[in-house]
Image (cartoon, rainbow over all chains, first blue to last red; front, side, top):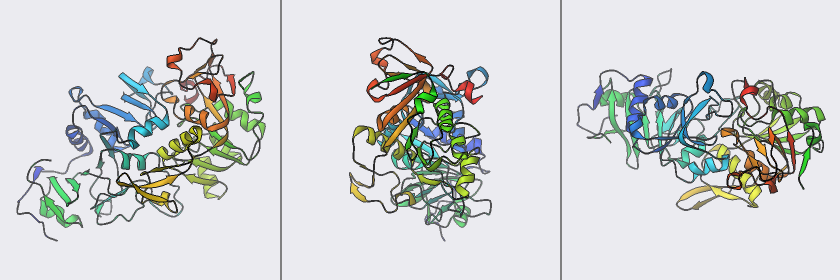
Length: 228
Length: 229
């Protein structure tokens, strides 16, 4: 497969990004004043790199806006937890609401960005992140489908390759999907991908050239000339 | 009709075999442990339970499942690191599971309380959880028809009630309490404090007393902190 751009390279780092560097990059890309939901696991790391100047309000789907950092020691209160059931803190200006209101915030399109982990993302933005589909696996979906279809922008954070070396960006998802055409951006250790009506565009690469990236990913990639 | 009852045993005494029971709580926050323990003791079985999860650890809803009282779970997130009682029953084919996206679960409960016969939502469109359901292209999106979830009984934990049954909750322990109280035919609430009528600021009431049938005071149940420790 050939790359549809003559640009030599979009590299912004010489090595692949670690989880914290990736979280820092996602945090930097979140517009000031945004309302954001961070999924369980790797996306939670993003909160460590949001700055006060950004004035980001974090939503947790169990019923709170204005969530603060994880609670420590005396701060721990079993009535104040996040969606991962981890004790958290409240920031000044926080609000609590019941579950239907909390999901209306997502489903009504009020949330600017959610950041989710994924098993696979397709070239058209289909997301698979809730169920392996393996026989005997007990399925659990939580709020993933509501976030995927409700947030204005759905960012995915994941490693580009599985442990076996297969690309998680795929032509069509083989895992059961969470949402159709919902992902707008994918942050991986090797590149940032923008997904739009005209296909998959690479915004930057980490520790590889666009050509090397194209050898790993089974969908046509285009380069974007400027940061998006 | 609002009743103040003296014990959790009295509060749940009327729950019959085969009932659909909504149980508030998200994880342990807001889970009415004392009412669930009383439900376990009263022996009601063949229950359909609506909760976000399917119990965790060796307490509350997890014990109800372990003892075989639950024939069906309607929930969004059954599988957790400590959901071993549900996992065992599910793998043995001894419990039925209706898996519902969390926002659909909340909205279906809300719809029941609000007299809504069903609604269309984009959540779940194109996924295996929407298989067999009616779909329509509305408002520029494909949407899936979802129906309300009614219940015979709701077990809810709140922080305080007043003499009219008005409720306030505490932090993220509020979660499903207000919508379950509205959706069930009979709502039983455990609180840590009962204040005189007029003792709650009407501007701050979260669940109006019209949705509440039975209230029982459970000492020290105000915060989940001591239960979860």
